Length: 74
Image 1: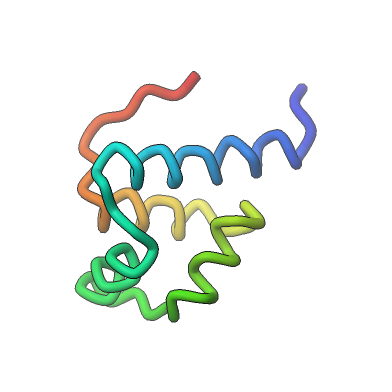
Image 2: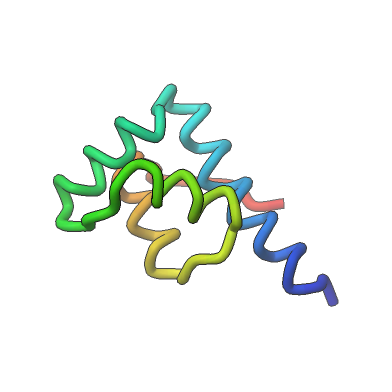
């Protein structure tokens, strides 16, 4: 079974890879999150993603804001 930090790295990687795939910066992600009612300042958002310590709900909010409709995990 992967260690907790392995799961955190995978979650962090999902957000970062989707941001890169869509060409979205942290500033743009912050604005997109605001548009769906999620209030994070850019610095906090950057730190949260960098640490990889966030809820599943936050992961889903980011993927929704980015515009991810399908993804392959693995």
